[in-house]
Amino acid sequence: MTRWLGSAYDWIDERAAIRNLLRKGLYEAVPVRGSWFYTLGSATLILIILQLVTGIFLTLLYVPSVKEAWESLNYVKQHDTFGSIVRGIHLWSAYILLFVIGLHMVRTFFSGSYKRPRELNWVTGVILFVLVLGMAITGAFLPWDQAAYWTAVVVTNIPSYTPLIGSFVRALWRGGDAVGPITLVRTFGIHIWLLPVILFPLIGVHLALLRKHGEFGSYVNYRGAYRTRQGVDVPPAPPQRRIEPPYPAAPSEELWAAPLEAEDFYPHQTFKDGVVSAALVLLVFALAVAIGAPLEAAADPSTTSYTPVPEWFYLPLDQLLVLVPRELIPLVLVLPAGGVLLLLALPFIDRGPERNPFERPAVMIPGVFAVLFMLILTLLGSGRLFNL
Amino acid sequence: MALPERRRLSRRQFAVLGTQVAGAIVTLALGIPIIGFLISPLFRKQAFTERRVGDISSVGTDPVKFEVTFPQNAWDVPEVKAAVYVVRIGNTVKVLSNVCTHMQCPVRWENALQKFLCPCHGGLYKRDGSYDGGPPPKPLPEYVHRLDGNILYVTNEFTESI
Image (cartoon, rainbow over all chains, first blue to last red; front, side, top):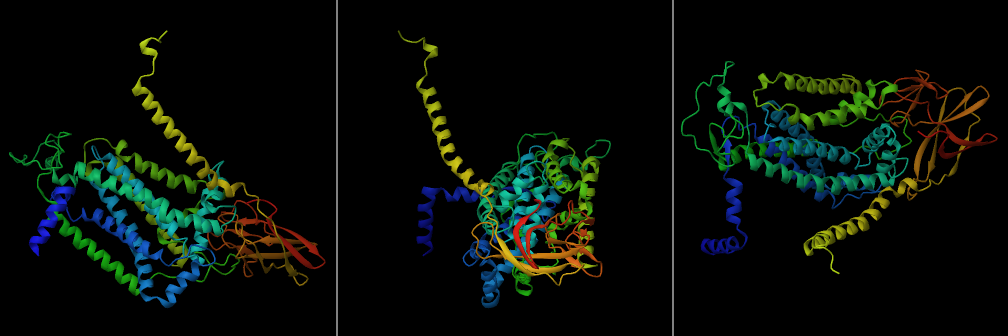
């Protein structure tokens, strides 16, 4: 049996070179120190794959029509225990994904991993982050319950404050002046096709770039970590350090070629990745079973008693809508757009070789303030909506 | 007489040009209908429908909510419910929509406040729909309407676009 499997493997390998592919995928050097932090990236990937799998199965029952969207999900809620769990997993893994992708970004920001030659890793990462936010917000429209309907109304109305082309953009998304049948179908198409066909190839690019340059890790993995303020290396680099792929044998910048200590991606890093991802998947499963995905009453555009409450990840923007005075409403577009542009520009603004976060106050201080600003908006928003 | 050597299109240049032209033709042939299809709802004229709301003789100086159904803006089934606030201001009747002009949330009449309140971002309107406070940039939209005695008919169209 084993022998038969072995020869089948050889047969395929001779034609498809899978052995080489596996070796390339699994045997890479990864910096030793701080490697639990590197699990955030793989956890993001696992959660996105979880979204893909549960999303595919949800399309097997969900009907993307204003007449039947809510009915189809209500049917699942009433009569289909496993269906409810799948929907719960889709919702909770989305929530946790947004959280983990944020941490992944913060980690990269703190460690200065976005610097040369990894600028494009960062840029693709920022685009992926925006696409994931797009997935989250379009997904929130689909149940067509009260929460979904009013999210759709408010979110599609925000672009109408773009100068000159505002009402055009709104009508393009809505498929008319008002939220209606075309809005739901368009948003469904964006959610299951348009964004994923950009998202998944870009994940491929992000990973290929990671493999090209290797995990940077943190400055503590490098000779420069021990630099004192006087510029003396303590201790000096080990004399005969083995340079391992994918790290360059010749330093591309003086101090940042290969890390001081590296270990094999498989099984050392995959073990840590596996532990963290499994813990997150179990957490998602537990939340899906214990809480599940809510479904409010069906959409009622004529309501005068319903108070729309935005999704938690959208609270900072919702609080901006409250705080920005009526004369300056386009600010609610300018601030997030400016934030994304600044994130994209980050590796081209902070170009020096310094990776130590404590030596980079020019980006760390604004970065910390930006995160605090978002947190304060979230707190103000939840205080307003839940009377905390 | 043959053209000078350097002026002639080489076999290679011809192939490059041909590839580019073929690519451009395919891009246009696919791009024009797809973009046209995408933006077609923008140029479709909205069909306006007039519906009977009811008898408004009992409406006083406090806004009263009525409900009416209209066809949707694309295929028109199922019809969609809309709230209509009717209020008497002096001798005139105001027929207001409950769509907030800020982010189009569902505005409600708060009797205790004697104001229209938007629950989303705290927009406030006076009883006649005019701006009172918060982020809304404009007063509450007014429906195009018709009174036949005390019977109110409204059209799914606002007097001013929002």
